[in-house]
Amino acid sequence: MPDDETLPVRSSNDIVVVRQVVRMRAVEIGFNLVEQTKIVTAASELARNTIDHGGGGSARLQSLRNGGRAGLRLTFEDKGPGIPDIELALKDGYTTGGGLGLGLSGARRLSNEFEIQSRPGEGTRVTITRWK
Amino acid sequence: MAIRGRSRLSDVVSKHEAAILTDWIKEQLAAVKAADRIGEAELRTECARFLTLLKVALRSDGSHDVSSAAWSETRELLGELSRSRARAGYSPSETAAFVLSLKRPLFDRLRGEIGGDADALADEVWQTTLVLDRLALFTTELHQKSRDEIILRQQQDMLELSTPVVQLWESILALPLIGTLDSARTQVVMENLLQRIVETGASIAIIDITGVPTVDTLVAQHLLKTVAAARLMGADCIISGIRPQIAQTIVHLGVELSSVITKATLADAFVIALQRTGATIGRATKA
Ligand SMILES: Nc1ncnc2c1ncn2[C@@H]1O[C@H](COP(=O)(O)OP(=O)(O)OP(=O)(O)O)[C@@H](O)[C@H]1O
Ligand SMILES: [Mg+2]
Image (cartoon, rainbow over all chains, first blue to last red):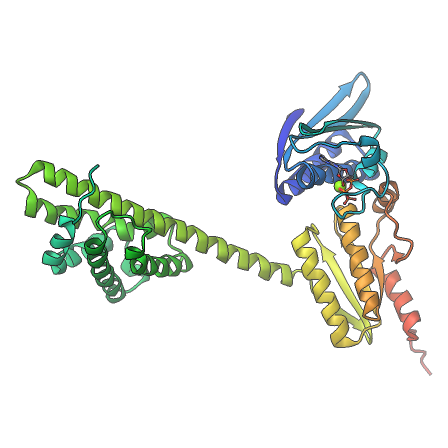
């Protein structure tokens, strides 16, 4: 399996594929069942946001080996409308799409590192990393 | 390309209709072994009907615009043909071959009629090619559409099959969920369960998610909606099959399941359900 690959995130079927590949990577890195489930669930949330709010985009999966540390970094990117108020979007329960409003904040809690870049009209990029 | 008011092709078709028909059928029987799947008699009927319609359309429409009203009956015939061939398992190119195999018989006759005038012949051959190619493309598009419809129907059949609601006990239903809970499927699940609650008058429904690999906010939302709807119908839900890793992840996501009874296994859920409905199970003691 390559250490760095980018998958399309355009249809709900792509979300299933992203989850499966993330799961395979997590197993390969040696994540335990709880860690696997956390990163797969976070990936599912961000992939769905990429489609539902960002109009589709891509997911980059990077396996990291940093000295003695192994980890998995996921970057979701779209060229959608962007998020005008990131702090608000990260509030539990905030949704503009009739969801639970827990996906973005939940993904942050499920990761060790979380980074979000977004500009109205240009798109959104969310990067999460989970270390073993 | 100049558009002429009237095509020589329609005259040629009228004049040699019987011979063209024979050549065309021979062509098809050789190429796609059509006789294997549809009878030669049926093929002959389709071909004869197509030639008749082609003649009429060519005569009334000099522009050869196959999407115009003059061609509507031709399109209808081809539509019917594409659908039945898609169902019979023909490939798109085998389906298009019905129209394309008419080229050679038509070219042969055109050559026989106007072979002396090279310019006129080239022009007619070109026009004929355009018309037949467009009609062939039309059959391909319709064939594709029919295949998609067939696949969609098969998927829907599978959706229903894979979400059976089972009655465990008097007034206790169970819904074992397996696989990915995308929206389309969850909708079916929800409707089936509610329907069965009405039919059986069940007071408890156990939704077992042992077979669901990922529980994210969308899945959680669907579960919560199902529970709320069931409650409106007078049935309480128990969600079972929440494995430790799922429980931890749900907590981190911030999903509130505290309003729902949850159990680790279907067996645990069943015991609770029995207690609630007042039934008891024990080993029969031997006298
Ligand atoms: N990629 C994105 N592009 C634009 N807006 C986004 C993006 N991701 C999130 N948002 C905004 O942030 C809000 C919160 O996202 P979050 O994932 O927490 O909730 P949700 O998607 O609405 O519901 P759910 O709980 O089902 O995920 C969204 O409603 C949306 O307005
Ligand atoms: Mg979301």
